[in-house]
Image (cartoon, rainbow, N blue to C red):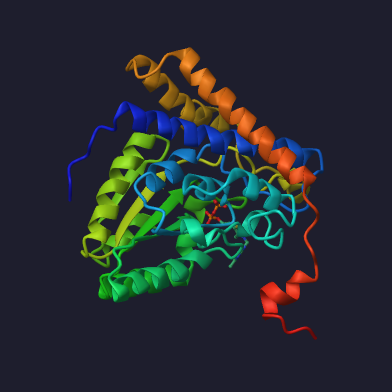
Length: 331
Ligand SMILES: Cc1ncc(C[n+]2csc(CCOP(=O)(O)OP(=O)(O)O)c2C)c(N)n1
C-alpha cells in the first residue's frame, strides 16, 4: 500500500468546505424538523462528517457508494446537489428522486450515489454487486459501502466479506463506529472488534480516528488504491460519535428514558471534526480566520438557496408511484 500523503492547502480547504456544507445543511434540517416543517424522519450525521468527506475525496464521479438511513453526509460528500437533496427531504417533485424517496433514500446515479437505504445493512449487497460489475467490465471503478456499527451485526455483512474477497472485488467497506444502534450502545450487542471480522477473511483492515479528516483521507487513499489496483476488498473502521439523537424526534420514542449521559456527548463535542480541522488550518497557517469565516458564510448562502428551492417546489406526485415502483403498471 502507498505511504500517507500530506494534503495540499487547497485540498484541506476543500475538505473544510465540504464538511461545513454537510454541517450547515443538517443544522438547518434540525431546525426545520423541530418546527414540524419536514414530512418524514431525519437521521442526522452531525459529528461524523469527516468520515464521508475523507473517504469521498478519494473517489471519482464514476465510482459508486452505498449509504445508510443516515445518508445526507454521504450524498453531499460524493458531490450530490444540495438543492435537489433538500427538496427531496421536503418531499417535493423537484427533489433528486422526485420527492418519492425522502431523507432515507437520496440517490443520484449520475454521481455514483446508489442510494441511502432505510434497511439497516441494505447497502452491503448493492455495493458488492456494483464492485462485481466493475470487475467483470474492467472499467476501473471502485465501490464503497458505508455502514454503521449496528449494521455490522447483519448476516449479509459476512456474506459480502466472503464473496468480495473470494472474487477479489474492488470494494471498500467503511464502518462508521458511532457507538450506537438506535438507543442501544454498540458494545452491549457486539462481540469483539468489527475490524477483526474483515481480518478473518484476510481483508486488510484499519481502525482510524473518524473525527480526524486527514486520518480518514489517508486510510481511504490506501484502501481505495488497493481495491482499484485489483488486489480485492479493503476495510476501514472509523471511530466517531453520533452527536444528535438517533432521529430528530427520538424523545417521543424514549418517553423520558435515556441511553447515554450528557457528559459523554459533551466530551465528544470537544473532538468535533470541523472545529479540529479549523484549528489545524489556523495553526498551520493554511488559512486565516476571516478566510474560513468567508467559506462558512458562502456555504450558509448555499443552504439558504437550497431551502428556498425546496419550499418553492410542488409536493411529490402520488401518481408517480406507479411509474417509479411498478414500471407503469397501474392496477
Ligand atoms: C433490517 C432493519 N432492521 C432494523 C431496522 C431499525 N433500525 C433503524 S436504524 C437502526 C440502528 C442502526 O445502527 P447503525 O447501523 O449503527 O447505524 P447508525 O444509526 O448508528 O448510523 C435500526 C435497528 C431497520 N431499519 N432495518
